[in-house]
Image 1 (cartoon, rainbow, N blue to C red):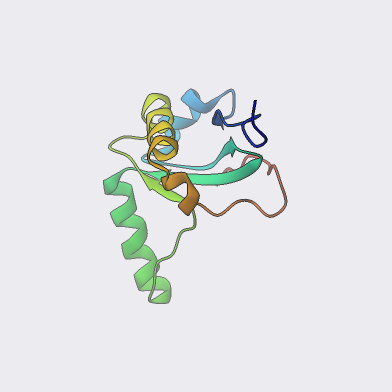
Image 2 (tube, rainbow, N blue to C red):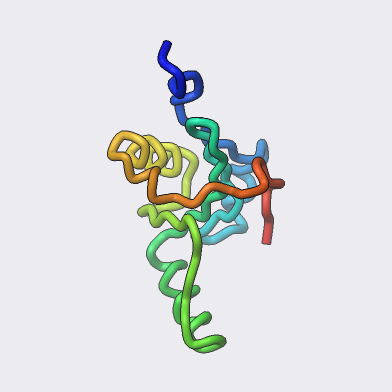
Length: 110
């Protein structure tokens, strides 16, 4: 094993009640944790409809929209989140994410 390969398999952590949470979330999930190569990334997932609503609301409120480590998927579901993370790793796009400076974070619920 080469140095740095010890944890090269990505791990996406979702809360145990994630599937129940989705029924109330309506198109987004904030607080997923991706651990990859010793880094922890806190991710936010949106579907396109909810993202458009959030962008419009933020533009009205503050004049701009910004979301760190945002990933847009067709539908916010466990399978599509896992698939997106696998593709980010496979394509190297995971390197565009910003790691959590404080290490693992608590699951965020809004």
